[in-house]
Length: 113
Image (cartoon, rainbow, N blue to C red; front, side):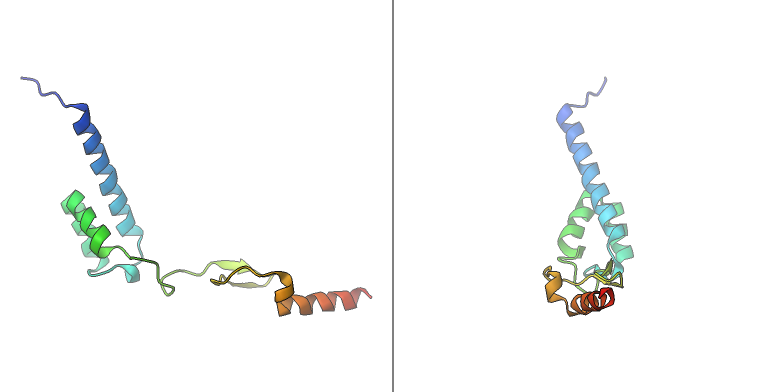
């Protein structure tokens, strides 16, 4: 007797596989300090061995709710003078609000005279 697999069961299987892969990738790429409730290694094992249920546990209990400031890695940026710094969580501001830029501009204007 040949067993026929219906289209809905194939779609459900592919959706579960995609969900499992997403959760596994998410656990692996989440920084150790941001993981909640259990060590990261245990979360990887739970997601791998419990598949769909482990992924659901990860999303509810282990995944960081929001990236805290201490966990986020600062991006390197270049200021208006070419100096290096780190990105700050501030609203954008115009050059007329930056005292360092204004000092530099004033020096350049004096040098051109």
